[in-house]
Amino acid sequence: MTAGLWTNWILPGIWITIQLTVYSAALAAVVAFGIGIARTHHSRVVRFLAGFYTEVFRGTSALVLMFWLFFVMPGLFGWALVPMWAAVLALGLSYGAYGAEVVRGALNSVAPAQREAGVALSFTPWQRMRLILLPQAVPEMIPPFNNLLIELLKGTALVSLLGVADTSFSAYLVRLATQESVEIYSVTLVIYFVIAFVLTRGMRALERKTKAGVGITAAAGGTR
Amino acid sequence: MNNWDWSAVSDFMPAFLDGLLVTLQVLVLGSLLSFTLGLLWAVGYRGPRWVRWPVNIVTEFIRNTPLLVQLFFFYFVLPEWGVQASALTTGTLAIGLHYSTYTAQVYRAGIDAVPAGQWEAATALSLPVSRTWFAVILPQAIRRIVPALGNYVISMLKDTPLLMAIGVLEMLQQARLASAQSFQYAEPLTVVGVAFILIAYPASLLMRALERRLVR
Image (tube, rainbow over all chains, first blue to last red; front, side, top):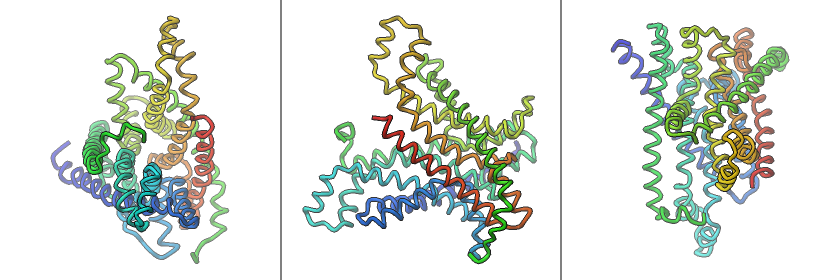
């Protein structure tokens, strides 16, 4: 491969992949916490709606959702999305639904006495969530969130099918130009692997930091 | 929602059913491949160092890279290696290989959960390696991992639309062809989306029920 192929296609492609990952992870995090907290709400209606959301978005394929947002929404509702944002929306909404399950599981794993202590101190529900439950639940969420983040990174490759010029799309173009399939697709796989490795390292550091923040490194192997 | 057309839904039905059959075919063959290969990887994780290392590296690599790129890799590279395979075969192989690295993790967890005393008992009886695996360890391991394997079959179902990228006529590709012909995008794509939910949701309920019954 020549240098021109790198600077014109592959490097911009990697940049698009990174942007997609960051934007959709941000949206997925908002959805995950919103829906996940709603699933622990005391009102049955709120719990049902949040559960319905998770089942629908976990039930369908991310690629089908992406195509639906891109091709169907304009016709039905008159909104047209740029491919990039249709992709971010599809990835964020569906991985957010998986994340909601992580948030719910982690919130449920906080010892009930902690919540009761908050009630006894007459904290408001929001104060309990923000000051007691979330700080203890968040470190528990990080390893499964790491897995989801890697899934999301791999999911960004789907956008190349909408014509977004990400790493996979650039690989396709380079293959057309050079006819060297083995080289370009091996390089592409390595690029994704390196990004995934960096993300995993970052999440491990974050896990250590949040765990140290609530002082549960020692208790992690204990009763919980 | 003013331009929804029910006749477009019924026009799409024959093509949809063809696509559904292809999707199910990929799913069944891909699952069988991933169960078999995954077991091999999992046994490899417990092998001597010179087996464990490469197995770890290869499965980590496959697990951390996108299925779509792997699909293209095999689709373009197999012919260069002199292997002539149809898009359907290539797609099934790629998806089976990709998911084998996930089922390997499941097998590994199941095998690790078998008490150490069982290994020791097999050694004490001086059972050969193959009998230790097939008569002692695996029957105990597999029972409790059935639900986890099932969950990966559901994930695999939701990844089958990717095969459209190499021209496999599964549900999404049929929807795309139908909309390209009729210019009605909403109906075929919605039918396919709803079909996924209708298959995946009951399947995940079933897995949850199995999990309650088998895992304790």
